[in-house]
Amino acid sequence: MALTHHPTPTPSPTSAATPPPNPQSGPPHTPLPGPLPLLAAALLTAALITTAALAGGPLRAWLDAMAGVVALVALSGSVLLGLTTVFRDLLAPHHRRYAQHLHRAAGLLGIGFLVLHITVKIAGHRIGPGDALLTRGLPTTAADFWLALGTLACYLFLLAAATGVWRGAFATRRWIRPFRLLHGASYAGWAAAVVHGLTAGRTPAPWVVASYAVCLAAAVAAQVQRRRRASTQRRTQRQSPGRVRK
Ligand code: HEM
Image (cartoon, rainbow, N blue to C red; front, side, top):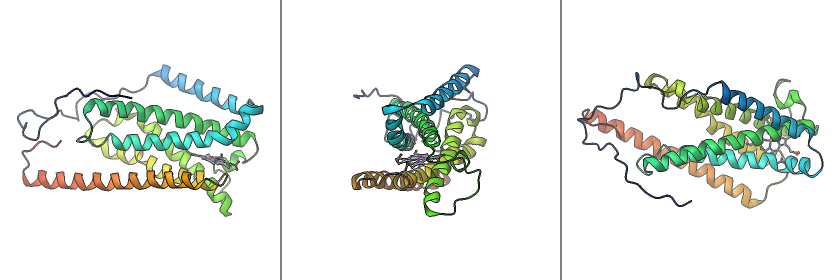
């Protein structure tokens, strides 16, 4: 997609005269979803579960082999796009907005295919509902452990998705840390999902393993860079408290 750059004014470190918006009192920047979107989500989930449970023939075979793969690729993309949006100095505000929309769209696609993946595996008797939801106790064999990582990943992704949808409820300075912690559960979920995806099913091709390893390494490097930059900013702020943080 070709994106044109429109210069958008960004707060400069010297524009100390303009007071920053008060995040304690401002309106939530992502409104809470109303009853209609929630009803639509519930209906869509029911339709996906029914489709996967009743599908037969080539559709069932395709979902059995590919739903997990599509979920893993889409959720990997979502995690990486979400991480991209935190680099304010690398992306113009409108590019960050595009990345934010793509992050949510990929997350939604991934969760949808995850629902299909889980339903098809249960409907095909590859795993029982109790084991799939980890309500029958902890795994005892290595094979069960690789599968249980999928369940753990699923719970963590659902937590990340729920906090993403209810982002508006966390849009105050007081709640931003809990939000980052809960939404950041997606990193642990992603790592667990990658290990599950590479170990629980067919033997993956070497290039598949290499691609996920590169993505995980890129995410770790980006996080390290982010922490470093934040601590440099905090140090600068302590030394000259009048400067506005970018
Ligand atoms: C409750 C959660 C989950 C359950 C019950 C589950 C179940 C399974 C099962 C039974 C397999 C083995 C496939 C086979 O040999 O037939 C498998 C493989 C796989 N899963 Fe999951 N899974 C879950 C979560 C996830 C998540 C969160 C992802 C990624 C986002 C994922 C992606 C994959 C992939 C890529 C494979 C390998 C491809 C395949 O053989 O289907 N799964 N899963």
